[in-house]
View: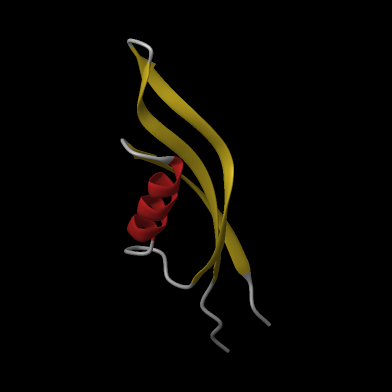
Length: 69
């Protein structure tokens, strides 16, 4: 039997939501093993002088906990 856990992270990018998602998963993979899925829980942008300067995503990552018998 496997047990999965969900962890929530926030990631940002100066270029796009897609980059923010990819960067968040890449960074989380350094400390969380066996990430099996992710979904975007929330998105927002930071606007300055009428221009988007930062893209933010809140991700929920699913990963399987060690399955030791």
